[in-house]
Amino acid sequence: MARDLNEDKFEKFSFSDAWIFVSLRGSLNDNNLVSFPKLLMTADYMNRAIPTHTEIRNAFEKFYVYGFVEVNETEILINQVVDELYELVAKKRGGLFSVAENAKTVLNSKRNKLEPIRNRNLDFQFITQNFIENAYKVYVN
Image 1: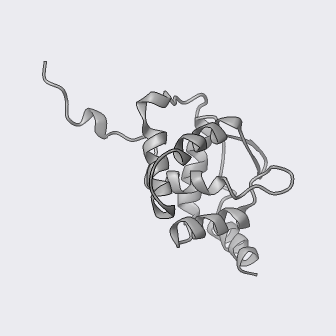
Image 2: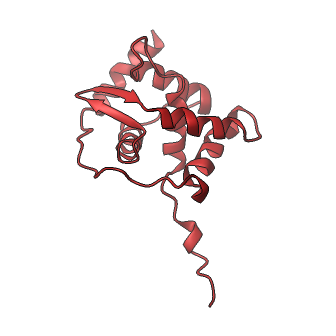
């Protein structure tokens, strides 16, 4: 039987998701919660760009579904699996600007057997353009 060449093309996580994923590493505040100004700072450092509110919201929706984060109102806590996956990313070759692409490879690898553990029923609508603009203002000041 011939193999479907499109079978391996489906990716659960996009480049933007992977970029936000690696930016989580530098985004935690003193309470081990995601600080959005720090997230933007780390994303800017990693990719010399600021992600949009849509990219961030979409990434966090996936992170929630796959169990990477826990959410309480507007507070986001990172789970241990993020550190475990980040260690796999860190083992890959390449410099700073390859980290997001390496993360995308790790997140989409069949070896890691990442499966959704929740339904996408959590509302991340608090991550608006205005919310990110305010975080950006804190970041640049």
